[in-house]
Image 1 (cartoon, rainbow, N blue to C red):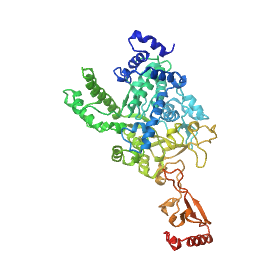
Image 2 (spheres, rainbow, N blue to C red; image 1 turned 45 degrees about the horizontal axis):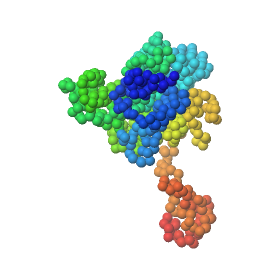
Image 3 (cartoon, rainbow, N blue to C red; image 1 turned 135 degrees about the horizontal axis):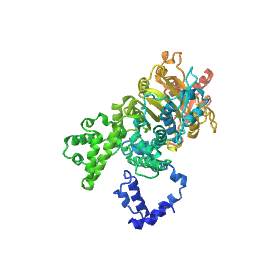
Image 4 (cartoon, rainbow, N blue to C red; image 1 turned 30 degrees about the vertical axis):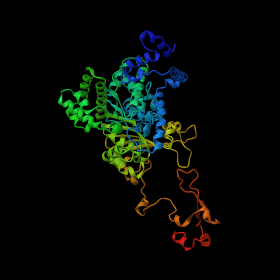
Amino acid sequence: MCIRDRCQELAAGEGARDGWDLAARFASKMLPQIFRPDSPVFLIELPPEHQQRLEKLLADLPVDVFTASDSLGWVYQFWQAKRKDEINKSEVKIGARELPAVTQLFTEPYMVSFLLDNSLGAWWVARRLTEHDLVTAETEDDLRQKASLPGMPLEYLRFIKKEGESKWSPASGSFPGWPEHLADFKMLDPCCGSGHFLVAILSMLVAMRMTLEGLTAREATDLVLSQNIHGLEIDKRCVELAAFNLALAAWKHPEAGGYRTLPELNLACSGLAISAKKEDWLALGGERYNMRLALELMYDLFKDAPTLGSLINPAKSDATKLVSWEELSAVLDQALSREQTDEQHETAIAAKGLAKAAQLLSEKYTLVATNVPYLGQRDQGCLLRSFSLKSYPNAKADIATVFLMRSRNWLHQNGSLAIVTPQNWLFLKRYQNLREQLLAQMAWCLVVKLGEHAFENLAAAGAFVAMTLLSAKKPGEQFRLSGIDVSAPRGQRSVFAPEKAILLKGSTTCPAGGTSRQLHATPQSDQLAKPDAIINFEPASTVDCLSRYATSYQGASTIDIIRFRLLFWELSIRNSWSYHQSTPRPEQHYSGCSYISADRSSGSAMAEVAGQMKEEGYLGGWLSGNRA
């Protein structure tokens, strides 16, 4: 008997309307953070024909699709697709109402695995493998097999042999400044979506802690949830999906004991709006002056939360000087336990959620791993644009780079950042100051240029993507940046996400015809010496740049186009003229194909052109760029 039928059978005995009502009650007991028993959703009764249609849709889903760990996330992104298209077509500036739909793009599994394998996995290797292992191994696969654990294959962990050395070492380094004990390791995903990074790192940390600390699977899982994993997200529904996926992964972990009450998950929505009146909000602090003052500061701090989300930095707030977030949270727990009106109860729940978000936003972490939102400055609303300009002027051109800079504030002194971003900040002129700042202040452990088609989702078509692994520790003179480029070389066919995943593992060939991609290691100090500090993996050139001798004010174009281009119908005879395609107009289907240009390949041809134009009425005006 399936679960649906079982719930339907038990419903009457439990006093439930039907099987779905009973399932909702069970869900609220399993995950009260997500499924609140007093939610109005549980009071909705659908017409029978609608309910039957929904039930049939669920019943017809293939089992693998229904049970896949990330299914809910992809369903939510699909559900948001229509709203995203509507917003993009409207060309409105993006603010609080539009941000969640427009910026959501869930991370591909291979990206998550690559970044975690080469950060947490590399740290593990430095403590798991011996000098003998690193010297005698013939291939990277040999080292991965020795370092891997059940549920932690480390298939994307990359190794390299440094110049002049015979032993392998992790390409991204060994992260010597990280805590020696995993009980002190803290990871944050500030844009966690439906929890891809959180679920992936759960299995890695559980395997490691079982091995290092002699814990059972259940003990390790509970400790990892309570001590190691933290997540924030601007979209409340995404936070609920992340909590559901993380809890499901914990219950399903082999030998962890199945369903049970889990520790409180360190997840919070950083985009909650405060709808309560200020006086009602302050009343939650009771008669305690410091609490009321802290609540007032928090009220002001989070007034723009629906737009700024995880960009908010409570550590800069005076509220932290008055009370700790844990103390404030305890006071809010007391407020929730008192008899209240429905409105007061909702205000207390919102304050409790914001106190949790403020706590997570204020803390320091060993590893920040995330796929940031992408949104250029010209598409941002006034609030987001002005915040970026004021807080992170070198990164203001895109919310992605603003998040990159915000992420630095979360890192411990030796913490690391593993991040998926657009690729353009690695080379565009407008990001030069940002590159120079980060190259001087942070160690660039690993850079991966993914290029176009890094996502399988068609919504990301045209996005050029990179993965970067940075450490807060300032690099020494001899520090080497490792990098790999799996984008399509100019003029060659595209490399799609499945092929990129294979190439990132170090495979010498790709089944679909791709070619091998070499892992490079170059001195980081050389990057600053390159023109505009552009990030590439080639050695710095000793030849003078052309910019020392010449300046280009314009790219490839027909500079004297006014003199040498006409509309094709303006001349009856078009000898020595070529058809000239220009930029089309967006509102016209067949535009940009109306011009002809003079062929200036020889003097005799030019004479012929001049004579022809004189005959047809252009006279000497043509020579000055004006038609007669």
